[in-house]
Length: 283
Ligand code: NGS
Image 1 (cartoon, rainbow, N blue to C red):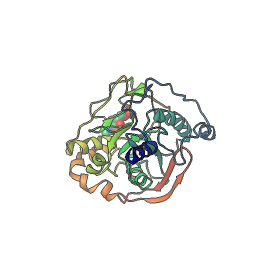
Image 2 (cartoon, rainbow, N blue to C red; image 1 turned 90 degrees about the vertical axis):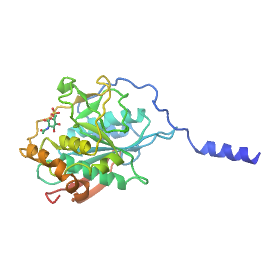
Image 3 (cartoon, rainbow, N blue to C red; image 1 turned 135 degrees about the vertical axis):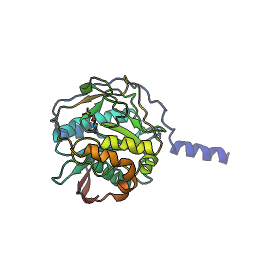
Image 4 (cartoon, rainbow, N blue to C red; image 1 turned 45 degrees about the vertical axis):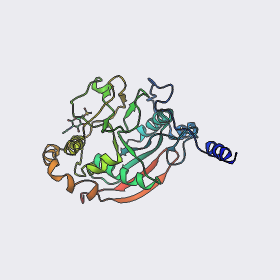
């Protein structure tokens, strides 16, 4: 008798594991009109301060940090959060959204910001995140079967983008939205810190993965669908091709192991954690 009572107690306290494939997933629409962040914040009271969420009725299978490199695109932030929170909640994952902003005036360094997001997000999670999704702010997923989790191999998520006519520009592309486990990201020493300006940093990651014998996986093109928000073109980095030739030699000497930055703050807003950092050419 005593034993069966104990079991009942445990069952009441612990929740079942969420379904492997959550119910009612499929195509979704995106609202891309200008909106106020204050208005978006009121729509999602179930999201905890810092942009954290875990499903209320089951234990999530995936603990995912969404890392978003950011500068100046304030008009995109509200649209992005308004789209991503309901999208991710429906997938029944445990997640946090980290907006990592470059505070200085040097050229945008997307890859270094993602490294910073990786390091700072881990500090915000007891036990740590197991999966990292690096996410451009101008891309909105249009099918919730595109699960924000990390499979056995790194996954390129944004394979089919409307602005790119829903075709893959080349086989090894790993930009836009990509997912890596803690182990995968650590083994390749994160991203390079040396790409200032547009282009190449994602190709550099491709080379790192190849060197460590990983390969890219993708969902079917009908599921990995994204819409891109309008923005001005950024200036390409003229040094990117030269840097790419050096990757396999410099992997150990350039990345998480050499990452240096001055943290301005880590602030918890309702729908996201804001990481603000000054970065420079020291690493
Ligand atoms: C390549 C860039 C990548 C970029 C990709 C897609 O040429 O960083 O285009 O860009 N590589 C180099 O410049 C070496 S996109 O069509 O999405 O604007 O991700």
